[in-house]
Length: 307
Image (cartoon, rainbow, N blue to C red; front, side, top):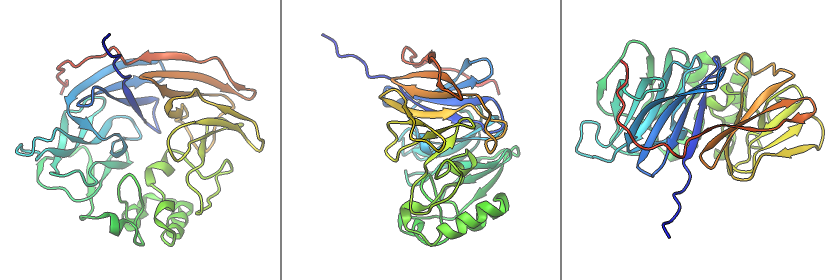
């Protein structure tokens, strides 16, 4: 009997100030696709396919959902991009409007500090193309050893406190300043904080612990474990816990207007076995879930970007 094809692997990049997202779908191993998702209508639009790899944890979507930054590889070391590169594109497509050759797999990619400012992670080589649409902040070469030193924030790249200063609120600045004194594993990422992840349901910071979760509603808290599995909802100030389905590889919420003031009712979204699911969350708990899209049947096809 022929072996069953493994499910597609999904990672979702949510815009924080717009009802939009980009899904990075991988499978088979050297085939990856980007899909745009209108979160108001739950309509999906295929971006483009790549014969290679996009490193999901080093990718980011601008808060307004218009631009994508990502680190990719086709391992063609003799090409103009030297086998790996960082690019900025117009979501959900991956055709670059700005692109930097990399040549290795150390760091790479970046994050958006705001709608029009992107921070590149680590050292890059030649600038092959540069758009005026996005202002780029590039930091010098870094290493894992330097990442543990004062003034750096990890993982997901290396973000220097002095680089982030102008983008942090006074409260956030105090947290970053304190974290400079802590051990490697307790450092924060700007992206996590921007997306609403906190250490506990009261939004307090405890530098001895990892990120605890984010508010889905006024009454429910989404918890994300360190190993990325067994996501669960927990009711504020109680021991009531609802586990998401086993095999969930990513989970998030649908709040985009104001992550600091969660609504009374919202939607939780999760990825499992190549499919995207959603369920309403009310004061009493989680409602019946429905599948939004099955990404498993998708196969590679050449698609041109409309720009």
